[in-house]
Length: 79
Image 1 (cartoon, one colour):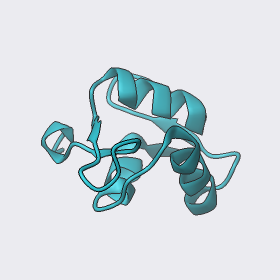
Image 2 (image 1 turned 60 degrees about the horizontal axis):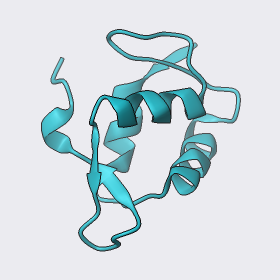
Image 3 (image 1 turned 45 degrees about the vertical axis):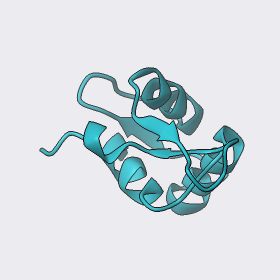
């Protein structure tokens, strides 16, 4: 079963992460063996998904913690 990347972005809402803490949160919520897809990519593991989302500009700097980031809600597709 593949999980849409939107589920990860929704999970991130209201929280701040480093790449390592986001990876841990994804693994905790969806399992270490989970596979992910987006509108344009498929069969990604959590690390590949984070890299993809970061490259697509889906993250923004955290206001609360300058070394962390959060989801940019304006960049989540609404379908």
